[in-house]
Image (cartoon, rainbow, N blue to C red; front, top):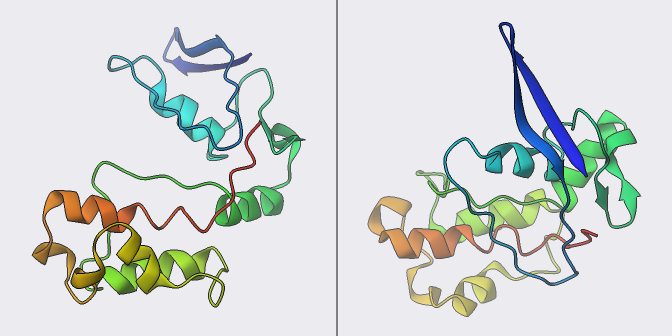
Length: 155
């Protein structure tokens, strides 16, 4: 399992203590827990934004705890995605342009049609709308396609 400890003054905070998580290919996982239970720490470690104090994380059969900075950058660009509560859409871009940005970042331009992606989440008629012109649920559906171009090789 992985552990993550922080030193806050003279106090050692155990954000994660020997946590085990196995996610099968295609499996959908929700991380729930009270404030301060380590959810964000766990997601940051899984997403290669932070490293555990002890233990290892395997993505697609590769131990990412020993990966170089450039390998971690490539992993985050090509594989890992986060959907934030605030959606983090670009306010000056339309729904279509926000999805196109995610496709471009993933390096999938040409192999994924952003119009079709928006159509698949019921927003084909809202492609030219800006985030402030969309409901919260519609904004969430615009944010969802961003991660789709990436793979899911977590193991």
